[in-house]
Image (cartoon, rainbow, N blue to C red; front, side, top):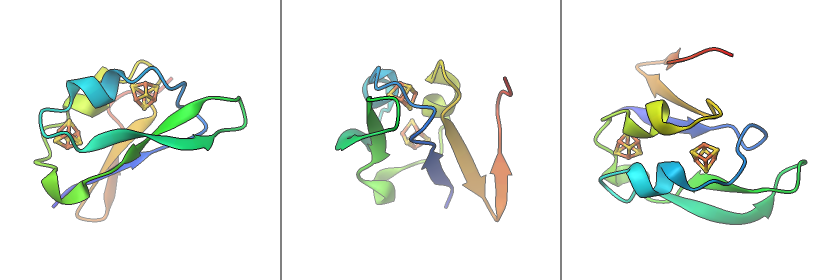
Length: 77
Ligand code: SF4
Ligand code: SF4
């Protein structure tokens, strides 16, 4: 199964990924990153179907997917 990886330092806590995920996999954490934002976390990893909607939704490219040992970057900037 694919694994969703969220970079806490890139996340600005906009919650777009949480709302976009059709499986309610993602949620907001209670910790702050170094920029003072609450960041998204993978709350229910077993529910993930690998649809990649979260990866393409994040405006800050904070979400990547690990598939069979390969980290997939959908955008780079
Ligand atoms: S890949 Fe799809 S199901 Fe998995 S966390 Fe992202 S939006 Fe949710
Ligand atoms: S869409 Fe990106 S920036 Fe917004 S909460 Fe999710 S991971 Fe963080």
